[in-house]
Every structure is written in structure tokens, then in C-alpha cells.
Length: 274
Image (tube, rainbow, N blue to C red; front, side, top):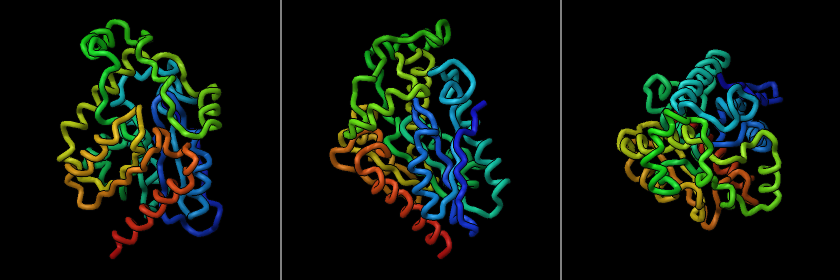
């Protein structure tokens, strides 16, 4: 089960405008989002976050995800608990990269969609292609017979994810960030969830805001554009940041990006009540 790794309450005595629940990306952990959480608190949003299985402070082999459906289910359970602990306060789900895929799949279940005001996804893992065609062919088999095997060709460590050198150093020296080669089952699970989502863009109805850097080399910004174009959601927005890389909340302009997210939530709350 995932661990609730970060709960930064709002320090004022007034009720928060809303609550944002953070679902981190592959190989990282929720503690990396403390600065974002502080900015949210300053704007009167409460924040919760969890570490997936095999990530951060959660149980399991580091970097190993037996099923992303487990992460989707944990996200739903976590949301339900937060809603019951904070009656009447609107909740938003935020997911980065593969966490964005998790959030999008979670929100495809009607009972979860009913509990959320909207979802925010940065650099979602949507159109994911195997690092080599043979990986796509053998991953389903390998993931069953040798799920923990580390596929040496599937390490994207060399691809820059931020234009801020200090942010890169902080990420890759963080002991809770997994920096080894991707485990076969984990890679197979990412291919599986992303292909499922791609086939079902037209059935997305949850209000959403998708943000992506145009120079992202880890996930495909054009897939985010396709999601925006095809989704049936009545309330949907996209923001493409020219020349920005994958980890948007760790780019030099992170505060402005966080502010774009906060402003979207505030607009969504006022839209809901008009």
C-alpha cells in the first residue's frame, strides 16, 4: 500500500478553497513537491500526496510496480479518505508523467470522477513507445517470467528533464529517486496504461488541464494535444510551454507554472458555482 508521504495543511484558520492531491511520476516521490505544496498553501489550497508502491517511502522493491492498476486503486482509496476527512471541500487530482496517466485512468471511473472537481496533468505519459521494438514484443512475456529484471536499454537517465542544472543534481542525488534501469514489469505497465488511455481519449469527460513542454523528450507533447482535441470533457484546457522540458515543476519557471495551475483551479471553482 502506498504511504501518505506529504500532508501540508493550510495554516490559516479559514477553510481551504480546495485540496490538491499529488500523484508523483515514475521513479520519484511525493516529497519532491514540497515547494509546490507551499505555494498552494499560500494561495489557500490544502495539499495531500502519496508515494506509489515501490517508490519513495512506500513498501516494495524500489522502482518495481507490479501493476499500475494497483496505483490507480490506491489513488481512488486515498481520494475517498481525504473527501471523508474534509467534507464539503472540493478536491482536485494532480499527476505528473506516469502519475498523469494514473490520474486520468482513475478519473475514468464514474465514482472517482464524481469526487473530483477536476484533474491537472503535467507531461502525461500517453503515447509511449518502447525504447526498441523488441522491448514491446518481449515485455508482456518477460514481465510475467522475470518481472523484476532491469532492462539495461530502458534507462532514460541521460535525457535532460529540466533546464535548471541544480534541479537535475537534486533529483539524481536524492536517495528516494530510483535511478537504475527500468524493471521489465514496470515498463510493460507503462506501455499498457498509455495504450489504454490513447484508445479512450474520446470517452474522457472529467474537467482537466493538461500542461506540457514542447521540448519534452520523455513524453510526447503531441499526445497531450490529441487528448485535448479528442476528449469529450466540457471543461478542458491545454497549455504548451515553448522549449520547456519534462519536469515542468522543476523548470526555472516553476513558480509561474504552479501559478497557472492554481489560477485554473480557482477559475474552475468559480465556473462550478456560476
